[in-house]
Each structure stands twice: as C-alpha cells, then as structure tokens.
Figure (spheres, one colour):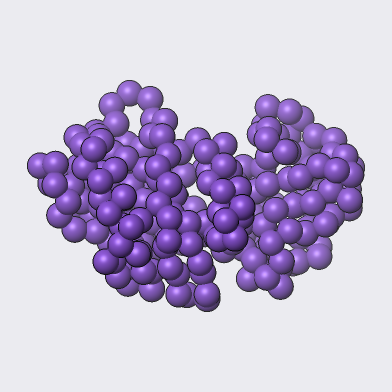
Length: 139
Length: 92
C-alpha cells in the first residue's frame, strides 16, 4: 500500500496539469516500512525525453541520483516515481513496463483535458513483463 | 574502503544497511564483493546471464561508469559508488 500525503499529492497533480498536454515525471520521497509506503515529498524532475513528450517521459539517471541524495539528506527514502498520462487512463503501458525498474512504486496520473481524472500505482516485476496494481491512498 | 550506497528497496537484502563498505580496486571487484557479502542482491542487479540488468546504472561518485572504463573503472578508498536505475515510459 502506498499513501501520499496532501502536500505532495497536490504538488504532483499541479505538476501533471502544468505540463499538459505533455507528460511530467518526478520522484516521491518518504518512508518505507515493509510493504507500507508513505510519500511525504514530491520532487519535480525534468522530462528529458527527446522529441514529442505527449506520450513519453524519460528520467536522467543523474537526476534520480540527486533525488536519492536529497532523500538521504532529509532522512527519507526514495519511494517511487510518478508520471502523467495526458488524455489517457492511468494504466501501466507496454512502454512503461519495458523501461521500468522493479525496485520502486510507479504512480501514473491520468490528466483528461488538462484536469486530473484518476491515478493508479504499479509495481513492475524484474523481468519487465508484468506490473501489479498497488493500493493507492491519497489525500 | 570504497562504499556503495544501497537504494531503499534493496536494503532488505543488506540487513537494512543503506551503505556497504566493499573491497576491490575496480568497480567490478567492488560489486562482486558486495554480492558476495549480500548474496540475495545478485539476482536484483544481474541477469541470469551474469550481466548487469538493463535498468541498472552504476555511478562512481557523480560519473556514470559507462563513460569511464565500465566495470574496469578503478576505485579509490574514498570513492562512493551508487546504483541508479534507468527509468522512462509513456502512455503509448
């Protein structure tokens, strides 16, 4: 189960709406206790995908490294990654799966006509062949 | 000794350690020592063919080892090694 506090949740939604009709991406910092995760900070990261970003995002590893360092400096953990799907559902696409990492939760925010619609959290496997839906609770 | 920073989700395989001190004079030796000390990490970092998984990047301090000498990159006692995944995606 992953729980996102109000402040980071509002920041993630605002980020996703601000980049519409393009995809946004960012890191979620917080705490992990076994399968229980709590997101306390949303950190915007640049979508470094070249070309159209309407249906693509890419994180620079060095940005992810910086997010991990930020988490450590705050005494937190890097809990997961979020990104948006403009005018699409919050599914975990084939592209998401093939470029995922099984270590983190992946929250996908569906933005319809510029407004937040719904979200899901996903846990991809190590083989990048399937992703399990994770219970998502947000304020 | 050089140290390796362990990403949160992998700490379940290192006895909750967030940093592991390793022996070795190259990145390859350091990673090998890491997976010897914590054997369950191996399948998370390496494929069945013994190659680093496609989504695993290794940084020496702030530099990607792909742009250095890859796993033959020399490491010093004071160096910090980070394990950083590649992540991308998109709705279609």
